[in-house]
Image: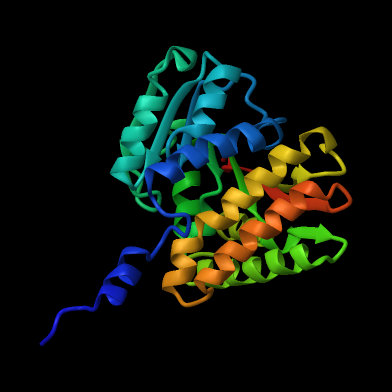
Length: 285
């Protein structure tokens, strides 16, 4: 019996998280939060909250912002990747993140916490990467106190749009279609539209959803360059996975880089990429 080929080994190493787990990706996650968190975390009903758990906290990017916004919160973050937790501990040890934060490796579908341990549970860009989100939703509700709130901010990749159609926009749209097809093998890039259904199936109450506009040249026009740069880095973070899957060719990587340079230089092109925010509550009964 022969061993796996180099190509097979590369593909095996790239299963799962489409953005990869490199040091570059860890920096990208911090930069992403700087662009998105002002919209994504705005309006969370955290008044009177003492204990908040973030599932899939990654490098602690959202926890950093929560620490700055709500210094009295007792924060806990879990991630199944040990390297991410190590990075999160380093990021949250900085003076700007002063405050007690507990970080540990754990499975979001089998949480090591007692029933009712938290007032709020939060997910941000987690469920899109999970092939079976229902157990995660159930566990999130279990560890909430009766009447506690679950907030899920997740993608709806069908909302991504660049208009009007130009050669650059067409190249980016082709890449995005390939990106979503590869991500769908291990997750759901359209999970935003499923959030309310998942919450109902898990037995949540007071279920509401809202569209957020973290990427929009219409509503955040002064941030256009930052938004384009964020989108470029987001889409290109999937290049190793897409190449390994045969979904794109090396020439496509260069083409999409050139397309984003053209996008950055053409202010006529509008950007839009919505997210969906779910709010629901564990039964108080």
